[in-house]
Image (cartoon, rainbow, N blue to C red; front, side):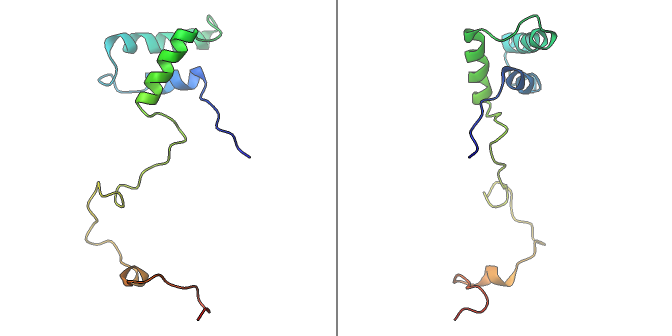
Length: 103
């Protein structure tokens, strides 16, 4: 059975530091790369509880969880269906299809 693993401080900080600058405020824009650098160089072994809570809240706010499924933009209606998209015969039926060989 697979368990949901929490992202490490390094993973969260790396994802946050790669965000566009307009998404972060000035304090976050300066602090996150500095924290990441300190962890990578070994100056600091782990984030303090306060730092970890702040990083985790911003990580979840921006929905940077790598395990979140990608959304199909066409089926969700965010992008119009292209006119040249193929339509399969079973998509035109108004009833569910049965597997071959079943009566």
